[in-house]
Structure formats: C-alpha cells, structure tokens
Image (cartoon, rainbow, N blue to C red; front, side):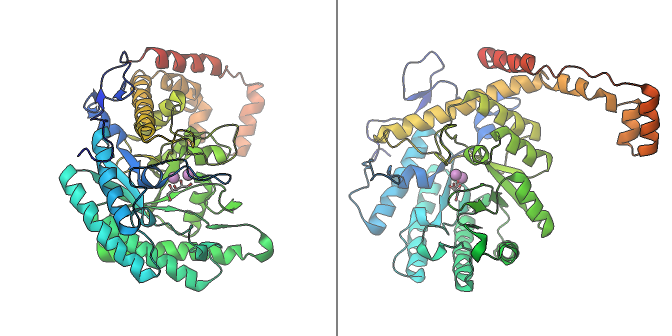
Length: 438
Ligand code: XLS
Ligand code: NI
Ligand code: NI
C-alpha cells in the first residue's frame, strides 16, 4: 500500500557505508546472530499512540505535526490511522504493534458508544493484520486521560471509577485476545497519589491488587493466555507512583502473592527513578520477571518522560546484553514507546526516527552478542567472585558456618586482601567492542 506515506518505499538494509537516510545501516532483519534472526532477537513493535496519535503538543504549545489523516474526524480518522499504521509498519518491516484502546477508536459520548467504536475499528485492524501478517505484541487501556480518572483508576477513592476501569480493562483484554496479542500491559497511569493529607494508601494498594487478580480471573475466563506485565514508573503524572521501579513492584507483588505478572521495563522510566536502564533490566532478570521492553531514552538534563527515540548505542548494548543473558525477550519484545521531537514535525521524520532506533538496537545486539560469546566481561566477573567457590566462601554459600565460625576465621586470618574492580579497564573493553564489532 502506498497511500499515506507516498514517496517512501520499503526501507532496506544497505550497510553502514550507505548515505541513504531511508535505509538501515545495521538492522538486517534476516541476518543470523547466535542461531537466531536479528528480527527474532529484537521483536520490534510500533507504539500506536506516539506514532499515529502524537501531534507535537506540549504544556506550552499546540500541535506542530500535519499528518495525512488530520483533516478527518471520528471513525473516519480512526480508519485512516489503521491503514496508515499498517502501511508504516510494512514499509519499515516492523512485525508487531502495541496499542491502548483509546488510540484506536474515539471515546464517543458514553461507555457503550466507546465499546461499539472499538468493535468497528477492531474489524479493520484484523483485516490489515491478515493482509500484512503483522501481529500484536501487547494491548492496554488508557485509564488516565479521561477526567474521571483524575484520582486514579483501580486506586481511585471512588468505587464507581474502579468499576469503569474494570470495564475498560475487560474490553482491552477482549481486543488483545481478538488480535492474538502476546502480552497485556498495566502501566500505572494515575495509580499513585499527590498528598497523604487525603489518601488512604493502604486501601488503594489493596484495591490495586484486587484489580489485578480480577483481571487475571477474567483472562482465564476468556482464554487469554498472554503474559501480564506491569510497567514501573516513579512519577509523572502523579508525584508518587505506586509502581516506582522494579524492586518496588516486586515488593508489591510478593506482599499480595501475585505470581502471574512480569515487568515491562522502559528506559526513560528507569532514568526518572534514578537508575540506569541496565539496572532495571538486571533487577528484573535476576528475579525472573523481565518480560518486555519499552525502548526509548530520556534527556539527562530534563526531569520528565521525554520518550525520545533511542540513539544511545552504549545503553542499547547493555540492554541487549541483559536480554541475551536471559536467553531472549519473547513473548515480549522491543516496543518503541518513543516520539519524534516537537520540532521534527515532518511526516518523514517518523520514518527516520524509527530507522535510527532500529539501527541503534541492531548495533547494540551485534556488540552485546560478541561481548557475551567472548565472555569479555563475564570471565572477569567470575574471577572476581572466585573466593566463594572454595574454602570459607564455599562454607558460606552452603550454609555451613555461623557468626562464631566466621569470627574465629577472621581473627585467625588477620587481614583480607582484595583486588581492583578495574572499572576503567572494563569500560575500555566495552568501548572497543562497540568500535570493532561488525
Ligand atoms: C507512559 C507509559 C505508557 C505505557 C503504556 O509513560 O510509558 O506509554 O507504555 O500505557
Ligand atoms: Ni511505556
Ligand atoms: Ni513512558
């Protein structure tokens, strides 16, 4: 199809020598890396909201972006976006999309109108999915934009709002199942609070857990077997978000005995929480809950979720390193929860941004795979912990010593000799792999 993005043809891999902006320099979908195609390592997805609904507004200014569907209204506009979205993904060779209910169809004037609109557009989406072979990575609901959610959705002080949120998630789960979606995401939205002067945090958190369990019951009832994911974020829109970061969410899940939820890690949310992207991925991986990834990046000088397209090769490398250590990201993937800057308002900027994001992660994958298979970092790390493989270390690991025994050992030993962490040397190794991996 060549209707909405005329003049842009299929984006091909041309290699790093190419000067063609509209080509991949590193992303070569069919290239085999460690026994798997690049596209199957990366499982790229288009975010419906930023790509097809973003218009460049910010708190200080109006829309800057003229999109080919801007002249249309209501369901006509939604239909055009479906066609445009699938044309966009086909041209880029992106095989998955992620969506909120509100991205795909207009809200209308009542809940029943909204549900009806969703069914109408779902049919169009299904048609396009069949024609193109493009799949759904995950679905979710927008339970944060409508004014009724101003105090939260499942954590609202108002029980009617809890019910509305449930109605939305029910429908979004129906849609995700209908599209064969492999995951369902809960991003907190306004699940948090502004002040303790008016908030019963205990009830709100209990309700959040109740809500998740009801969602799981409903999923079981309709036969949705996809993965449930919570997407941690520390702040914005609320000051205190309940899903602050990976370890906070894990504490919550364990308290309420919820074992059916994994995590969707977003780069910009990690940095907002004062962590690196890799830290959050690592915490999720070692706890067995690394489920999927929202690929983007923040600006270190700005304290909000700028959702920029990822161009930082170092971060992408360390991300793919964690993914490889886990043995892959499926059934999750890499969703570009990223938007073009307000000043990058031309429609072809959308293509350029995706190409740069995909190339960045392709290069990251290439470098990470070399680092991983050469054990370039791993052999140093193994050696660093070797004192736990024998002697007193082994006794500690096996639970065969107590404080009395350890104290006696330390007194006898007199001193402990430690070795350098060699951080700069290791950073140099990573740099050389980035320069040299092809
Ligand atoms: C917002 C979140 C959102 C989720 C989906 O900051 O990143 O876009 O990914 O609701
Ligand atoms: Ni996100
Ligand atoms: Ni975000």
